[in-house]
Length: 364
Length: 104
Image 1 (tube, rainbow over the protein chains, first blue to last red):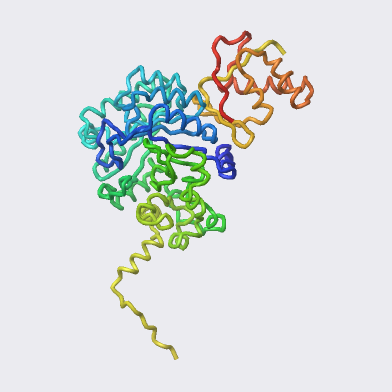
Image 2: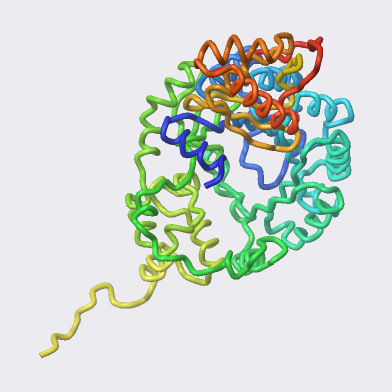
């Protein structure tokens, strides 16, 4: 077990929210076709409120802080917030489109000791990238930002969301990341909008493409290992938690709402009405999330993939039940291994055209 | 022990977790956990107090350990953290305050 895993285990035992994702705004200068947010300002947290929340998080033991949005630099006070976060010794990661980053912003992030800056790139071809962001010239500016951040010695990662409109582009983006000397991450997950609207899910790549991604050694490394059939789950798996959401991780919206995770929009309290730690310890919603073990999942506990599936309880929640399957993850498990999930088998059975009531002939 | 001054780098993240200090360098992402004694030295690294004084006052008095052993261990600890840029070491006091000690 690595030192980091040990710390995660300890945080879990102690009930410490080790990692918090704070969206400082939902406003954005891009209008990405797959974005799950509403970009209007409905009354964002003020500078003073955010500083107070950061103080509360530091006291709660939060170490990893992700500052994201929207576009973080749409807030004029972003560097004041960042400086305060670093004064409180958080390990800070920033998610940005980079469009508003010039040399002075890059230098400031370096001086403030930011751990990593993640920049979204969808294609290395402007006609594809800019069509997704709906901001002409955005690819050029994002790449320039990456160069500036790198030149300051900052660690940079390219986040490449894969969807129908940029399906064939990941090799180009990966090569771009290599040329720029930055980390490359690929994510084929498209989530419903935060208000539950599922209209953007038609951007999810088809199963055949997902299969190609999972069997691409340049993306996953050891394909045989990555796509291996799931081992028989042991008791530790059945007693285990699905992910860190609500256990050691939390998400705070620009309006102060607390969710278990950015992908798990279960309203659990609001830091404008209650202290963060009170919500973290006492929210019935968070406590319900924490109570769920793999063995409590009615469908997934019967699935051969239960120990290796990337099942997102947030996506399951958006599909109707936090204890239910996340069909996007069922699809991933299937395309990765070729083995149908319990949920897929259940649906196939329900949709089969056999007789509703089957009568077994009595064998004498 | 020669006169040494130590200061916490501004390029680190740090937090107490269950009685241990987690420290991570943003320069090379090296991650450390400090035990109770190391945490005391870390917290006292204000850039102005000589290491010898920190060891004598914060370590020997607090933990009732032999001064020679404490000095040797402190030197080793400081060398290791300074190698990763987590602690800054100088033979004269630092001009700039390393900032507030992280929340416990």
